[in-house]
Length: 307
Image 1 (cartoon, rainbow, N blue to C red):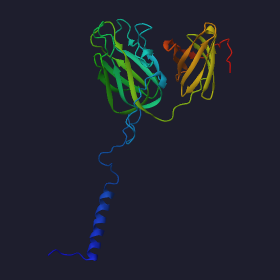
Image 2: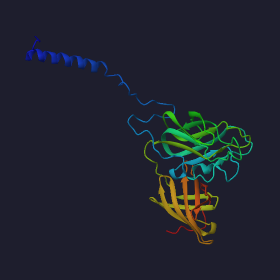
Image 3: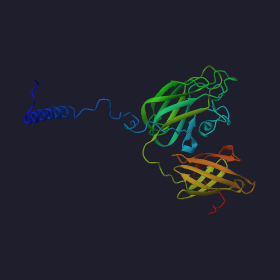
Image 4: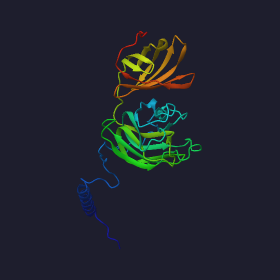
């Protein structure tokens, strides 16, 4: 027959069991739980904390998201310039200057620090038919959270796809504000290298910076004066009696522009970089017209801002 435990015996068993379980937890109290690791530090930043969403789905390398191109090693023409990589369209691509030796380098400045976890290079749509092997191939990506010039650490190295897009996930998210894409080779063309798009994905680290854009800028359309009132911006420039009005979101300006003298009008977008440089585009009748860029400072325009 089975032995029946008395209430006293059952109480003793419960106490012993509790003591054993407590000892196990105390012994493991200073050890990480199996399957969970603390965020790993790198020379640039830290990884995204456990439990946070892995990545945003929006390509951060877009002018409308506040990204600007700081520098590019070369471009074959003004049509096939690096600005095409962030203008939000696939109308034109970037192409290296004819015969320029590798590596080719493009540096992007993000609107703020981001924990980058994926990057991509898109060769789909490049002119492989007329220029076989023009697609980029050997890619190295560096990141910095210090400046556009210093503090870079290699994030990943991969082979871009011939005539197609390739996305690569980093070993761990890394916090950076500047990304440097270095093209070390192409698929065999001896004259040019072409890329239709470069992308990066990740989550913002900290709040978005609030920029003050009030000031005078020397642009490729002459002196421009901008005044800011909260999120509202207005401005004027002497070229064809121009004026603009719009809104500021972070460091991105969206605006309408009007030129009284030649009756042209359209919309535009500009981003103010950390160095006080404007990088932008203007559109007319729904079509991209060209770039609109400049630097802060200099002689103001003759025009008066109309409030």
